[in-house]
Length: 446
Image (cartoon, rainbow, N blue to C red; front, side):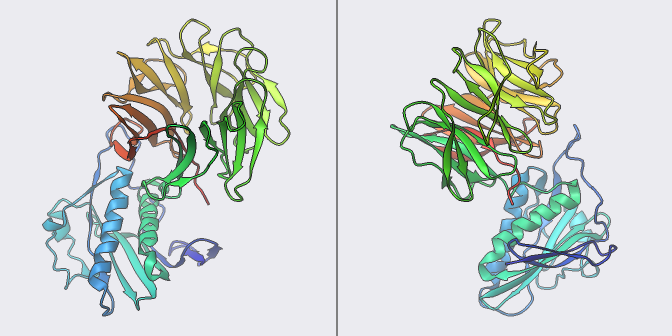
């Protein structure tokens, strides 16, 4: 199917036809382009929002069920963002049978009195095969429409319509789209092997990527979303492989004797930082993926591992034990000007550079348990984000820099969790008796 997107009503009616999921027939919003919520503010608090049951626009036997499916899916998507407080429907004052879905048919005082600041309403019509739905977000305080969309698709498309409108809400209120077009790669270990899987941001649609029946680890998503780099022992040696996620083709790109581990990609998806032990001990190299050309960055008798580029690609953070215990260091992109970043704690590893460039997340040992920390990329005192029992490991940032995903193990179960970048709003992405570890967040996937 196709998607047509009209610009804001005060702009020329220009259509951009995209090969996506739905036909977007309508876009309205006098407040288009205005950012309402500063979610990066230190004083940010969740915003109260009400999601009303959708209104059927013509009689159909399944209307009541579909009304709830729209509102339930929207509520779940908004809750997953961590930015909204969903108001209990039992507190709603309006009569659903009399309520309208346009600003002139809404009693906004009925919503302000229960504490709502934003309101989502909508309507739909279906013949059991085709489905058309209208979604509208209102600013209750101002009594005005913020953004409205109309989608057309098949009868089973209500969930995707709702999730797409959640992204529209985030774009209208925060200036950035949501993360429902991203996936998280991770390693799932069994008794005899470990394989790479991916899963949606909302915990749906887990997919197995490798089937090597071997130890496979360290997935690293390319910035263009086309490839996963990882290490596997499928042929005995820990070699680096590249999986084309569109075609499923896999090729070996790093296969020197000894250890071969992928680090982070360049922004153009043409180069990959790698850790190799080809010259004796573990050192960091910058590899050109197409031809395997190597540029050596570290030259030290210690172990140097886990390289990650800064967003501007001018610096590289990495882990080294050159001063005794594993600590995080930063160097220039060519390997010059090495300096130690972490001073507190006896064991700090797994650095992850924020897409916004200011922070580095990592795992550090506290009283025998690994916890997640962040530290300013220029140095200073770290901030501990997790405090619960169990080892919290392998942090990875969302592409907008507003969330961290990490693994937790202990007590006979393992989890992959997501939290806001400040350490709040923790939720479990998946939980299993088998070990799930080393999560890595994708870019926005097209």
